[in-house]
Image (cartoon, rainbow, N blue to C red; front, side, top):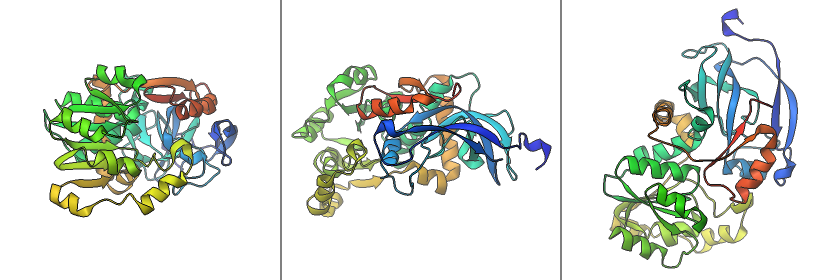
Length: 352
């Protein structure tokens, strides 16, 4: 490998891994040998990674396509330390961000160069990290999957979380009115973001309340719960021509475990009425950020760069619920499972 590729020797790195199915405390730290980056890869010295609900699902062996043992870590912000063969457009020393799905609970990792974009040097890394997975998800759902014009209404499920809070930011910046569904403890934060809070747990009559506030329904509902919530709340809350965007399945994997009752409900009684969708011109669409990264890489990189610039300029301000050292990943998982914080939980990998 030519010298211009940068560091080529094998490195020792610290990782936090999920060795088997288990609770948060089952996460384990380890030191491993990291080989030189391969074809199309770069080695990234990781500054920050995020804690996502998907990490909990992975830890419990339920995430499609991911097998245990696994090093979680859906996204990162860091600096390029070495280039593998065939890499163009990045240089050693570049500060970058990207979505990795796994592997970022570490001090360094080899990452596909196509998954990364350069990020502003002057902006706090934890703030940028809070907008990588969550920001791209929110940005693409509101700009590419379902749109809303100024003055129109959207509904954001999980409005106190990482994706939801950025959706509220984006809506406010575009003059779009928003209803945020969350537990009462997060309602003040939702009001501060310029949205109308409602308690998501009060399903009975919730769709009617949304229609009352919006004077006829929302143009888009962003639903990470799915299951019966989609059928009983999200779809009935739409105005004619509106779209429900499903970006998770929390109802079936609540707490990182399969809920048999929710699965049975989907199979036996939660069918969507296609005739009603046609009459109302409503749509239901799923969103998966990884598939956008893999199958529409140009759009993914463009949107990620736009989100990073918006954070740097201050037009998006991701909510950070807590920042912990990488070695405290187990505590971070427990905090997320208990819903102790509003916003993104960030792991600082620099001191590990």
